[in-house]
Length: 204
Image 1 (cartoon, rainbow, N blue to C red):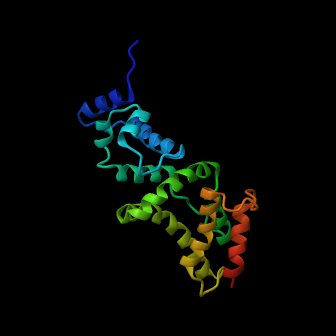
Image 2: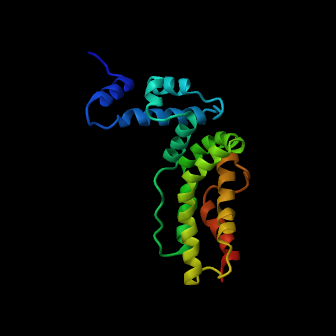
Protein backbone atom coordinates (compact mmCIF):
# COMPACT_ATOMS: atom_id res chain seq x y z
CA UNK A 1 0.00 0.00 0.00
CA UNK A 2 1.46 3.37 -0.99
CA UNK A 3 1.38 6.14 1.60
CA UNK A 4 1.21 9.82 0.78
CA UNK A 5 3.19 12.25 2.95
CA UNK A 6 1.90 15.65 3.98
CA UNK A 7 4.42 17.18 1.56
CA UNK A 8 3.26 14.97 -1.32
CA UNK A 9 -0.36 15.87 -0.59
CA UNK A 10 0.55 19.55 -0.57
CA UNK A 11 2.28 19.21 -3.93
CA UNK A 12 -0.74 17.41 -5.40
CA UNK A 13 -3.03 20.18 -4.15
CA UNK A 14 -0.75 22.83 -5.63
CA UNK A 15 -0.66 21.17 -9.04
CA UNK A 16 -4.42 20.78 -9.27
CA UNK A 17 -5.77 23.77 -11.27
CA UNK A 18 -7.94 26.11 -9.26
CA UNK A 19 -7.69 24.14 -6.01
CA UNK A 20 -6.61 25.80 -2.75
CA UNK A 21 -3.41 24.81 -0.97
CA UNK A 22 -3.61 21.84 1.36
CA UNK A 23 -4.79 22.92 4.81
CA UNK A 24 -3.26 19.76 6.29
CA UNK A 25 0.24 20.96 5.43
CA UNK A 26 -0.49 24.41 6.91
CA UNK A 27 -1.72 22.86 10.16
CA UNK A 28 1.24 20.47 10.38
CA UNK A 29 3.72 23.32 9.88
CA UNK A 30 2.08 25.59 12.46
CA UNK A 31 1.86 22.75 14.98
CA UNK A 32 5.53 21.93 14.40
CA UNK A 33 6.49 25.54 15.23
CA UNK A 34 4.45 25.48 18.44
CA UNK A 35 5.82 22.09 19.48
CA UNK A 36 9.42 23.23 19.00
CA UNK A 37 8.85 26.44 20.95
CA UNK A 38 6.97 24.60 23.72
CA UNK A 39 9.92 22.23 24.01
CA UNK A 40 12.21 25.16 24.78
CA UNK A 41 13.54 26.05 21.33
CA UNK A 42 14.14 29.80 21.20
CA UNK A 43 12.54 31.78 18.41
CA UNK A 44 15.97 33.04 17.40
CA UNK A 45 17.40 29.53 17.06
CA UNK A 46 14.30 28.08 15.39
CA UNK A 47 15.11 27.09 11.82
CA UNK A 48 12.95 26.39 8.80
CA UNK A 49 14.85 23.11 8.45
CA UNK A 50 13.83 22.01 11.94
CA UNK A 51 10.20 23.01 11.34
CA UNK A 52 10.15 21.13 8.03
CA UNK A 53 11.58 18.00 9.64
CA UNK A 54 9.07 18.10 12.51
CA UNK A 55 6.13 18.73 10.16
CA UNK A 56 7.18 16.08 7.64
CA UNK A 57 7.34 18.50 4.73
CA UNK A 58 10.05 19.99 2.56
CA UNK A 59 11.44 23.49 3.08
CA UNK A 60 9.96 24.53 -0.27
CA UNK A 61 6.48 23.74 1.05
CA UNK A 62 7.03 26.20 3.91
CA UNK A 63 8.50 28.93 1.74
CA UNK A 64 5.56 28.70 -0.66
CA UNK A 65 3.35 29.70 2.25
CA UNK A 66 5.53 32.08 4.29
CA UNK A 67 8.23 34.40 2.95
CA UNK A 68 10.37 34.13 6.09
CA UNK A 69 10.56 32.77 9.61
CA UNK A 70 9.10 35.93 11.17
CA UNK A 71 5.90 35.62 9.14
CA UNK A 72 5.62 31.95 10.11
CA UNK A 73 6.06 32.78 13.80
CA UNK A 74 3.32 35.40 13.68
CA UNK A 75 0.87 33.01 12.04
CA UNK A 76 1.77 30.41 14.67
CA UNK A 77 0.99 32.91 17.44
CA UNK A 78 -2.34 33.79 15.82
CA UNK A 79 -3.25 30.10 15.55
CA UNK A 80 -2.17 29.53 19.14
CA UNK A 81 -4.49 32.22 20.45
CA UNK A 82 -7.46 30.94 18.48
CA UNK A 83 -10.58 32.91 17.44
CA UNK A 84 -11.47 36.22 19.07
CA UNK A 85 -13.64 35.85 22.19
CA UNK A 86 -17.18 37.22 22.03
CA UNK A 87 -18.40 38.83 25.30
CA UNK A 88 -22.07 38.35 26.21
CA UNK A 89 -22.46 42.08 26.81
CA UNK A 90 -24.69 41.76 29.88
CA UNK A 91 -22.21 42.50 32.68
CA UNK A 92 -18.77 44.10 32.59
CA UNK A 93 -17.60 41.86 35.42
CA UNK A 94 -18.83 38.67 33.75
CA UNK A 95 -17.29 39.68 30.42
CA UNK A 96 -13.92 40.46 32.02
CA UNK A 97 -13.95 37.19 33.95
CA UNK A 98 -14.65 35.35 30.70
CA UNK A 99 -11.75 37.12 28.94
CA UNK A 100 -9.26 36.51 31.75
CA UNK A 101 -10.36 32.89 32.20
CA UNK A 102 -9.83 32.42 28.45
CA UNK A 103 -6.22 33.51 28.92
CA UNK A 104 -5.80 31.08 31.81
CA UNK A 105 -7.25 27.86 30.42
CA UNK A 106 -5.09 24.74 30.05
CA UNK A 107 -4.51 25.42 26.37
CA UNK A 108 -3.12 28.90 26.99
CA UNK A 109 -1.19 27.74 30.05
CA UNK A 110 0.61 25.27 27.81
CA UNK A 111 1.27 27.92 25.19
CA UNK A 112 2.63 30.31 27.83
CA UNK A 113 5.98 28.63 27.16
CA UNK A 114 5.70 29.63 23.52
CA UNK A 115 5.06 33.26 24.43
CA UNK A 116 8.07 33.21 26.78
CA UNK A 117 10.28 31.97 23.93
CA UNK A 118 9.08 34.82 21.70
CA UNK A 119 9.81 37.60 24.19
CA UNK A 120 13.56 37.94 23.34
CA UNK A 121 12.65 38.15 19.65
CA UNK A 122 10.13 40.90 20.36
CA UNK A 123 12.63 42.90 22.40
CA UNK A 124 15.36 42.91 19.80
CA UNK A 125 13.30 43.26 16.63
CA UNK A 126 11.06 46.35 16.22
CA UNK A 127 9.58 44.79 13.08
CA UNK A 128 8.73 41.56 14.89
CA UNK A 129 7.19 43.58 17.72
CA UNK A 130 5.11 45.59 15.26
CA UNK A 131 3.78 42.47 13.57
CA UNK A 132 3.09 40.74 16.88
CA UNK A 133 1.24 43.80 18.13
CA UNK A 134 -0.94 43.59 15.04
CA UNK A 135 -1.87 40.03 16.02
CA UNK A 136 -2.78 40.79 19.62
CA UNK A 137 -4.37 44.23 19.17
CA UNK A 138 -7.76 42.85 18.02
CA UNK A 139 -7.86 40.78 21.22
CA UNK A 140 -6.94 43.80 23.30
CA UNK A 141 -9.68 45.76 21.62
CA UNK A 142 -12.28 43.24 22.79
CA UNK A 143 -11.38 44.04 26.40
CA UNK A 144 -11.13 47.75 25.60
CA UNK A 145 -14.69 47.78 24.30
CA UNK A 146 -15.97 45.95 27.40
CA UNK A 147 -14.40 48.59 29.64
CA UNK A 148 -15.65 51.49 27.52
CA UNK A 149 -19.13 50.05 27.62
CA UNK A 150 -18.88 49.91 31.41
CA UNK A 151 -17.93 53.59 31.54
CA UNK A 152 -20.79 54.55 29.24
CA UNK A 153 -23.47 52.64 31.15
CA UNK A 154 -22.24 53.65 34.59
CA UNK A 155 -20.87 50.28 35.73
CA UNK A 156 -17.41 51.83 35.84
CA UNK A 157 -16.21 55.25 36.92
CA UNK A 158 -16.37 58.01 34.34
CA UNK A 159 -12.69 58.95 34.67
CA UNK A 160 -11.42 55.37 34.30
CA UNK A 161 -8.08 55.02 32.51
CA UNK A 162 -9.09 52.22 30.15
CA UNK A 163 -5.60 51.43 28.85
CA UNK A 164 -4.10 51.27 32.34
CA UNK A 165 -6.96 49.06 33.53
CA UNK A 166 -6.33 46.70 30.63
CA UNK A 167 -2.69 46.49 31.69
CA UNK A 168 -3.68 45.81 35.31
CA UNK A 169 -5.84 42.91 34.14
CA UNK A 170 -3.55 41.43 31.52
CA UNK A 171 -0.17 41.84 33.25
CA UNK A 172 -0.77 39.49 36.20
CA UNK A 173 -2.40 36.97 33.88
CA UNK A 174 0.61 36.85 31.57
CA UNK A 175 3.03 36.71 34.51
CA UNK A 176 1.23 33.71 35.98
CA UNK A 177 0.96 31.98 32.60
CA UNK A 178 4.59 32.38 31.61
CA UNK A 179 6.49 32.52 34.89
CA UNK A 180 4.14 31.20 37.55
CA UNK A 181 5.14 34.51 39.18
CA UNK A 182 3.42 33.85 42.50
CA UNK A 183 2.88 30.22 43.55
CA UNK A 184 0.80 31.54 46.45
CA UNK A 185 -1.98 32.73 44.13
CA UNK A 186 -4.48 29.93 43.50
CA UNK A 187 -5.33 28.90 39.98
CA UNK A 188 -8.91 28.16 40.95
CA UNK A 189 -10.94 31.36 40.92
CA UNK A 190 -8.00 33.39 39.58
CA UNK A 191 -10.03 35.25 36.97
CA UNK A 192 -12.79 36.19 39.42
CA UNK A 193 -10.32 37.28 42.12
CA UNK A 194 -8.28 39.42 39.73
CA UNK A 195 -11.29 41.08 38.12
CA UNK A 196 -12.88 41.83 41.49
CA UNK A 197 -9.64 43.32 42.82
CA UNK A 198 -9.31 45.64 39.82
CA UNK A 199 -12.97 46.58 39.75
CA UNK A 200 -12.85 47.71 43.37
CA UNK A 201 -10.82 50.65 42.14
CA UNK A 202 -12.76 51.02 38.90
CA UNK A 203 -16.26 51.19 40.37
CA UNK A 204 -18.18 54.48 40.33
